Length: 124
Image 1 (tube, rainbow, N blue to C red):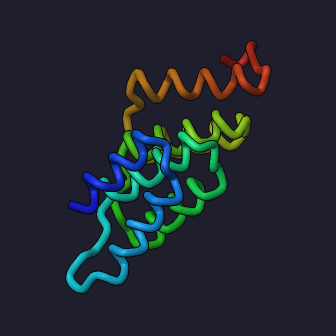
Image 2: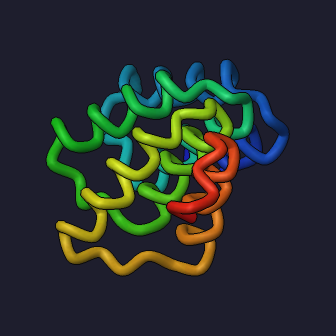
């Protein structure tokens, strides 16, 4: 499945390949990328430090009206952390909580990492 391939690309740090496969989904009749496919694509971008790409994918997910879950938000926060964008990471974390989505331990961990990367120890 597309999700498995994009997930493998994410694990291997192959963000360009992950996005290429995502593009294939758009062109495949009857295939509509779901939240799991997007989350894996965001994970691939996060691993490669491609924060803006990850944020763009989150925007697409929202535009499509897909239900954003804690795993997707965590992947985006991780991308912000790796891109040293602690303010954006906190913004995403706050958005997540405002929507009533319960953060996981990993969510807290990557958010604290984002604050640490931004030298915001007091906030962590």
